[in-house]
Length: 100
Image (tube, rainbow, N blue to C red; front, side, top):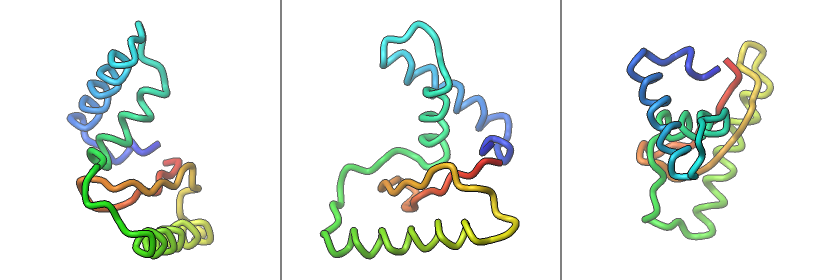
């Protein structure tokens, strides 16, 4: 699980964010879906809605990120891929979320 690399404050942030997400959805309890969304938000940051990429730039970035995913798939000691996502985040990267 990705939380194995987090410190206590990061885990607290994930829990708080999961609670906020659940509350926004008007849920009475927090479920795993909320934690998964919270992990993505805490680890990657907030998604940027500005600086729209042109179609050719999107294609270039997609090939680049696919290269990371394919490389990780074939590396013997890499974590198995659970999810590959490309979103513009405040930290300026896309994420490959593994299983450890």
